[in-house]
Image 1 (cartoon, rainbow, N blue to C red):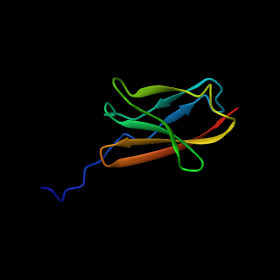
Image 2: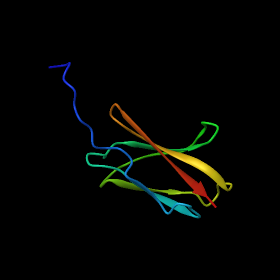
Image 3: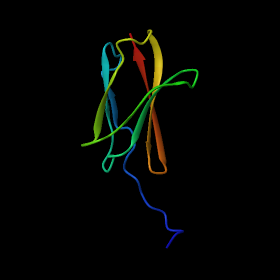
Length: 88
């Protein structure tokens, strides 16, 4: 049935360490292989984009970022989840 609602369990579960220095770990939910993980500044500019290739997590380097607040956006099929973190 094309009108049925499917549940997705791919939301951002964790971003650590927060605050971050050199890198952050983004832990996604189940069935997250293929999900797109974006690091976005507070102006809405995508700084980095990667895909979950196995498991349910990715590591994103933050070593070269200026200190401040950033967002992580996880796009998995039709579901979009966001989480904020601070770069020290």
